[in-house]
Amino acid sequence: MASYLPPDQEPYGTPPPPQQYAYNAQQYSYNAQQQPAYKPADQQQQWGENQGVQQQYFGAPSGPPQGQPTTGVMPPSYETAPYGAVNTESGLPAKFNPRPRYNDCWAFLLFIAQLAAFVVLSYFAIHEIHVNRSQGDGYGFFSQAGLISVLISVLTGLIVAVLYFMLTQAYPRQVIKVTFALSIIASLAAAVYYFVRHQWMPAIFGLIFGLLYASMWFFWKSRIPFATEMLIAVTAISKKYPATFAVAFLGLFVQTAYSAYFMTVISGCYALYYDTTTGTTPGKLQALIVFCFFSFYWTSQVIRNVVHVTVSGVYACYYFLMGSPQGMSKSPTIESFKRACTTSIGSICFGSLIIAAIQTFRALAQMLRADSDGFLAFIACIIDCILGCLQGIIEYVNKYAFCQVAIYGKPFIPAAKDTWTILKDRGIVQLINDNLIGNVWAMGAIMSGMLSALASYLYLWFDDPPFNYDNEFTYVIVTMAFVMGLQMLFTVGSVIDSGVATTFVCLAEDPAALARTKPELFERIRVTWPAVVQGVNY
Image (tube, rainbow, N blue to C red; front, side):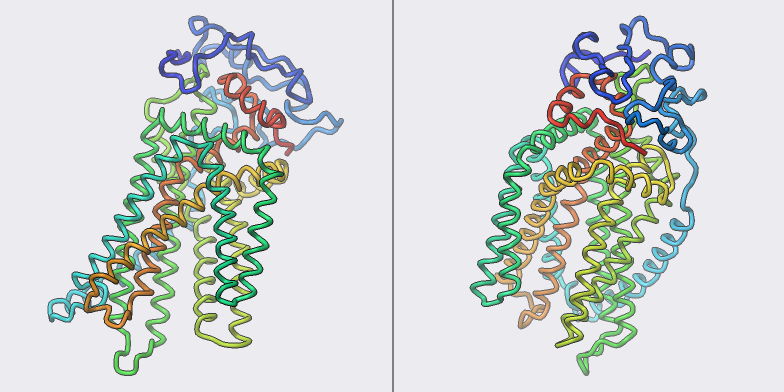
């Protein structure tokens, strides 16, 4: 039998008396229906023992679904499950699938196929590096000095990611405000730099964005309390379930190892096919490089999204089950990780494939822009801009779609459609909240990337390794170090970011669940954002 945790273990403090914070439907919903408070713990019954008790909390209302406007027209059902209906087998709300199916299996099979091709290619590439080293060539990066430069960038990114994660966890309100100010300073500093270099177009854009973002402070500062409450709540849950940190660090380790593996394969491909006599890159090498980058983008996205879906599942379980008669399972993180790696892996591969394809096309456009002049470079710039906007939109939808995958075990396409409905219903409020919290990770990732790149550059500057004669590889090494630092912090920061996104989706789907199980937290959120008590109008 589940009951509230002892006061010293409750992340939100001792639950108040039911009559003090009991959910008042007359006050918080359109279709007012009084919701009973929980009975004392010693009077609660186990779910499945008494259907009358279940119907008391989750029975379908007689009128329109609670949280929806009473317009005379019933809104469409959500996956044919009536609002508040109960699954008689599991005792959980009907939207939860106790036996989720394996969805989007084709995407998983395609992912395995490309990964196998990359592994085969890596065999020949690494073998070539080994041959060169055994002959004393010490090719490129993978001389002793090259390996040291890679290790320095990895360690720098790791240290910055861990410290920034701890800082965000300890001081959420201050981090939101400081990163907002830093984003303004960064835009204005870039504008000043380009003005000094007489590059007028990027200078003007930097100035416009800096001033525009500074003006947004006066319109968005009223939303900072809500964003802060979300961060505080998510941080408290993450402290209660430290296994979410282990998942994030596991993702960080896998991402770091895979990044080093990727760099090794790229170097081996150059060793195999680069024409040293003419100094040109053959078409075969170009095709292999494109494939390697596509594989790197896709695999990196899958690693990141497995972490996201795992952590989202933990937060969703806490939202709906902690404080309910069902109660939390003993190992929610392990169970969520198993679902992410089995029944949900196809959907994760599907959503990750879309982003990886766009990233690859963007990389091609950027290479074309760098190697061309005049009209062709202009066209490549436009294509890169369009793809960048498209990538931003799809990544935004994907984040919430994967929350739906984690909570309900949906295939990717239905999850994306339902996410779009939520985003349209919540409108500008969610955009502002995401901007404030996303700013925390964006500025942290830039800082991590810059410090990793700086560490690698300083090593190359002071040690002056032989393979980097005349700074031949400086740009490549510094750029890769920046990307590695960027990726590592984004992977670690996914714990808090995933928790905030999942909590927002749960609030949109069923705010009454939080009011019943955690009324004090619900009241704090309601004060900062009163519209939260209204469910999404499907």
